[in-house]
Image (cartoon, rainbow, N blue to C red; front, top):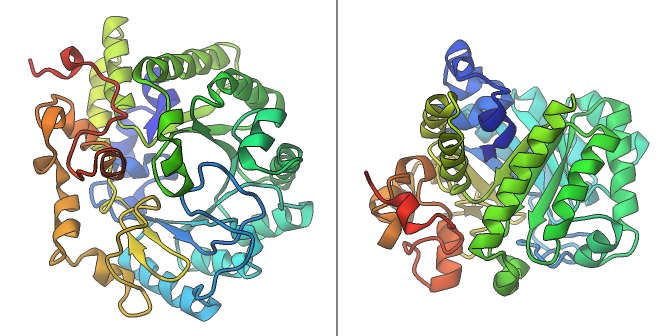
Length: 394
């Protein structure tokens, strides 16, 4: 994640990391990406079932419940292991996680074990009563996916009325006192919706938004031709920065992040340098602490059937199954060649990535996207929009 509001506008000072220390158990959630120990944030896709049919769904979710989902007792055993391992956050996702009746029970159990529990949801099923339950059990955050205003969102998500229902879910969370944010996946189909989304944030007093770059996985692998080209990506990132600044200048301080393209970090830094910002050296240090993409190291995924993946998009490769071996053991077993490589993938990337002066703060970007587009796991990420001149070593 690249904190646009944090890095560009200084909403979090670099000294915060020193003030809180840099071990994940001591850090507030907004600084977890800067931890030294890098115990993984774990995405648990607790179900493949979903009530929508989104065009870009990496899990290729479906209407019916899939056989073989981890049971509630099995899930609690996984949470015991993650807690003992030191995983700071468990993110319940899907499919649509709210369709699992035991979601509140599992989330409450995770909180009781000392983890921060968050959910990633389409928001359409969050009633007032469910929002109150989430608040009572101590859920830290609810991320609700909206990919444009009503017409665009409903077409993208495949169900009429999805936007209105998601907006109701947002309002129910706000009313219950739960921190809620928007999740928006950028592509050519909805790029004109970025600015209206900022207006929605302001009008609904939504404190956070994450703009996700498209990852070619699941149904999203069919959308490669619908991804932004490099010029469009630069325009959108600039727009996100500009609109964030406009909100702050108008007195609406929101948390704005971009996700899944770590070229955004150097791009923002280069913009600060061009503008002569005195914050540029501090931002460079924060980006170094962030270290870029951390699939297989700082983030991991457990599928509905217990399979362990490097991240939620890398579903075609499993390192093992939590039914047979604890996640913690699987995660630290570097006898698996790919797991060992992902722990320090910067020495394996090829082409322009290997010669890039920003490699230490990008981490080689998304390997799964490079593999999907080229067939070569270590090829340059095709979504990197930095020019050869911008990445050239001094």
